[in-house]
Image (tube, one colour):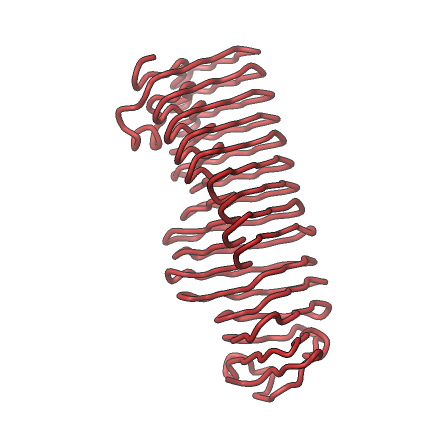
Length: 350
């Protein structure tokens, strides 16, 4: 129950493997910043080249800044398989890496109960995490299922987030999901910061009770969707861009529902394959490939509209009685013309 101490610490050339061990840590940190930067007060800490392998068993950590497993520094690595992890306390994350540390999780169950306590977190410095299977749950505010400023790849994992967005990608971060299912109370994916943030998703689903499915704040964001992802929100936009954010949003063979809103920044949407979009668009540029379909759900204003090879306005737009305006200079393929849309409504230059 001591502050700033770990139950297990491996550093340098040290190597430690456990099987079906029960690891318990109580005690709070004296520096939340140091806990997030280098693992101060973590229950299990691999540091500066140290390597830890935990097979089965459990890790229980209670206290402010008491992250369960942390890999910090170049070549530090934590490998977890079939574990149960539970933390309680603010900034008490499940598994975190930073400064070049890495972690690999296979069928690991993580449950966090505290503010700013993501089940999986990656700090800056080229760190990375891979996750395969397992279940991740969080109860605290500001505790997305994954919060990353590094590289994270997740396959076949279930996320249940009670008081946050499902995922947060910070500057320099890249999050890749395959066949992942996530439910969250406050939005889908937030991409933020002053640098590049990347999100890719193939298959799986994100369901948000409230909030936007994708929110871009300041970041230069690249979003790619493939494989028939299921995206739902009860009260929010498909994509919202603010705070001078720049978003590139590509979807192939997807069914998208929700509005696109750019209040301060820019967004380019590239829809290909059989992708459909049901929503209004404000302030974004849109490319519609042959075989796609935009069902306009409200009066819309486009920065630019481009039709892919073989696509015609009559084939890719359903107006539903709404007016769509476009910037003629940014849409040379439309020739500055006004078009009557299927289902009523018009497409005309602003």
